[in-house]
Amino acid sequence: QLRLVESGGGLVQPGGSLRLSCRVSGFTLDAYSMGWFHQIPGAERGGVACISSMDGSTGYADSVKGRFTISRDSAKNTLYLQMNSLKPEDTGVYYCAADPTPFDCTGNVRNLEFGSWGQGTQVTVSS
Image (tube, rainbow, N blue to C red; front, side, top):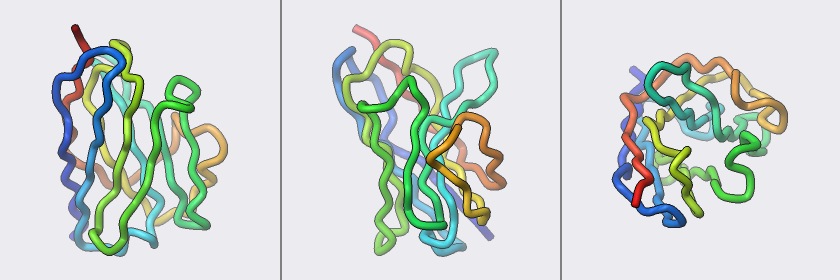
């Protein structure tokens, strides 16, 4: 059974940094495309970062390019999202997602359809 558990959210001031983690079990991390999604109340979840099972290539939403970095540590069965230069509009719940499809993460990551999800972790960027 696939399981994804996010952690690392919290309150941070604008310009600060956070690193989110997603511990996975029940599958091999490298064999799945992995993503991070962002959701605010009243809106749909939108992809912000993706790493492909095809070749490990990564992609980002325009709103986070140059500020966020997705990475994975297969030995620890953990996916990460390093978030730098945080802005108030980055506030929301962040979800980790997994899918066996070898997505092209170099294209539009916002609407990729992942099959498995974590429970989410809250990030609040405020002074």
